[in-house]
Length: 130
Image (cartoon, rainbow, N blue to C red; front, side, top):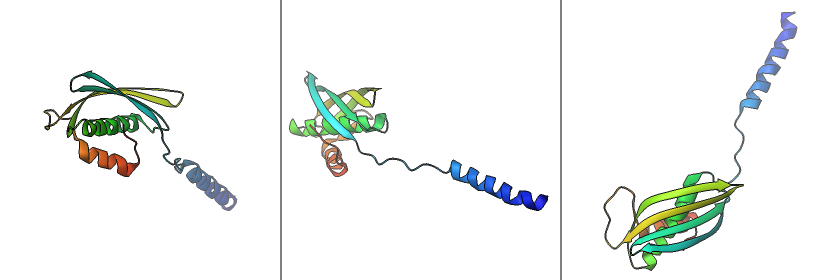
């Protein structure tokens, strides 16, 4: 009787391994739906961004950072400092409201970006800018 049970046990074990293997993830294919820029006060700027296909909030935050970098360059500045980003998602549509300060010199703070470096990375990664 033990011999006849061995193939059954082996089949159950193989089936369990197949079911627990990770599923292949769908390729990342974001749809960038646009940026609206609002000058709030002097060097304070809000970027309203929206996209579909984001994997998480980081993708939307990267999109806003790309917009901020390009905006700083357009205005003749070399740096930006991230102040805050509010993100929402509904039905696969991700929206963000990010606020940055822009400046000619490296601003104080931890969340600063070099606009030229970030804009180059955005172009390399296919993330559109302002």
